[in-house]
Image (cartoon, rainbow, N blue to C red; front, side, top):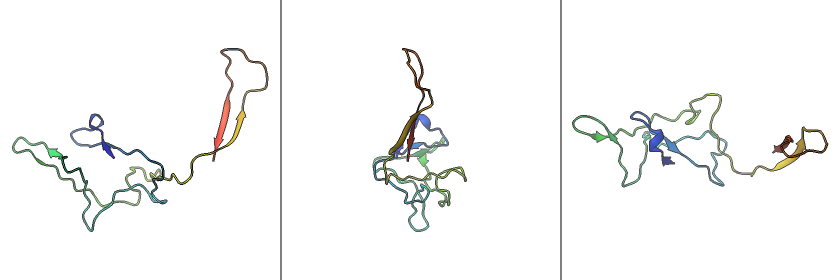
Length: 115
């Protein structure tokens, strides 16, 4: 995941995760991994996140709450699941527009159905 500073605030850090070919959550919800009883955000060796204070500025607490069954989604009904095991394939193409002769500017509605 990549930190997105312009989407972040003083109280919320935003990261962008780009799904790559062959990424998968194996049917589970997208979540973070804890080591033992410790759940924390791991940042690069040269990266620091500071908590603002007037004096002194201190390292931010990167402890995360324990993972939930819904993963990182904040919606119980819409979990985030990643599955790139099969690429989408067109199974049919049809048109809702009747057959005829059309001229420039006419709209033809086409429906492509994927698996």
